[in-house]
Amino acid sequence: MATISNRKLQKIITLPINQVFRYFTAKEPVEIWLLDKNNTRIAGTLRGFDEYMNLVLEGAEELHFNKETQEFDKTVPLGEVMLKGENIVLIGPRAPPTPPPATVSAAPVPPPQNL
Image 1 (spheres, rainbow, N blue to C red):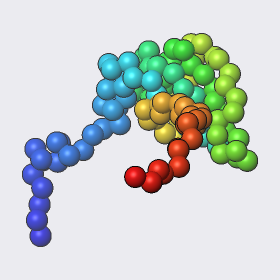
Image 2: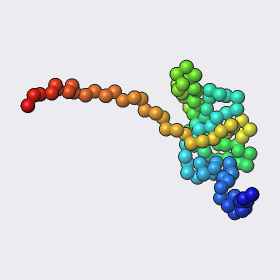
Image 3: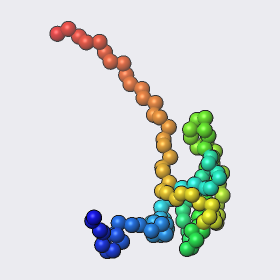
Image 4: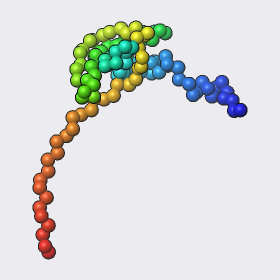
């Protein structure tokens, strides 16, 4: 049976706190899923965190998901908030908002001409 050395294992595994630190240092906007709040997410930029995964977010927004339209239809600005780590289910990069579909208009194509 193949074994992985301790050194290789350290390169493979990313500890959750290390990923949170990457979001923090890059000032990358994050989206957070909350326990028992399936239709609500919190988005913002990490300003601080601790070993219990308690997070401080700045520019936070509460996003409400509409099951019928399958889109986030309501955003509530929260400003600076602190989230308790035991209520956080998932932390990930915030997906950029999808632009509305573009309306394309084109000139009519002329009929072919006989040469």
